[in-house]
Amino acid sequence: MGTHFFMTTLTDESEMNNTSKEIIKLIIEHLEKNPSLRFGQALYNLGVNEDDGKWEPGVKAPGLRDIYNDSDKVVLERVRTRIRILGL
Image (tube, rainbow, N blue to C red; front, side, top):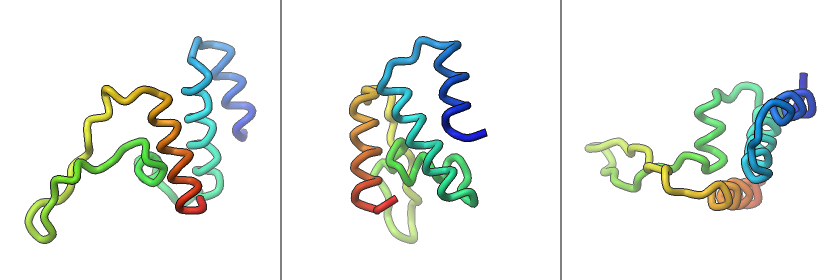
């Protein structure tokens, strides 16, 4: 199916902003390059979801940080940064 089909179908039926579309495009590209990843792993790898930084090795596992107040632009910049830094 590929990115183009999905994005064309999605954008024809919604009013998503361009930033959201770019985030989805990057997620799709990452999943296509890494088909063994689960969706949640891809979101975490790309920095869409982040850990809360409240963990203690051997005591408490990290939780996910609430990203409710993160704008799409902030999320997109985080994704682009992760791709650049990790060479994804």
